[in-house]
Image 1 (cartoon, rainbow, N blue to C red):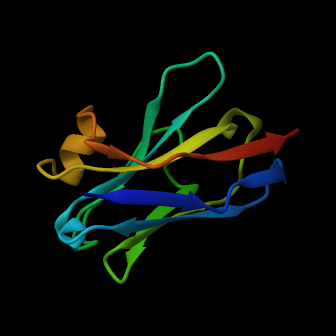
Image 2: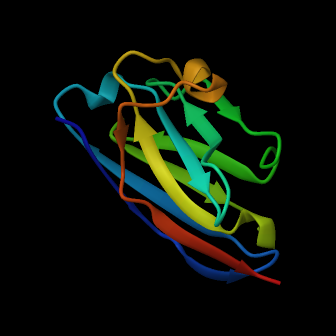
Length: 125
């Protein structure tokens, strides 16, 4: 079974930075692509970023391109560095992974099998 635990959320002023972490456990999770998603109040959950199992390929939503960076360290930990934050980035951020889907598929709308509990990011204006 795969478990995902996010951390690093908080309150930050517009223009500031935060780094989210996602610690994954599970025997084969190091071979899975991983992604970050977010859900703002009153809105549907949306894709933010994804990374291949090797870390060699990354994908981003247009709204965060150039400001957010996804990376992975030791294969089972994934990070989301968020710079130049905007009030519209306020949301609960979820880490997710899937046994069968590539990072490209996660970016393309496939719903992952496994989700973390989420971490709140609030950006004040």
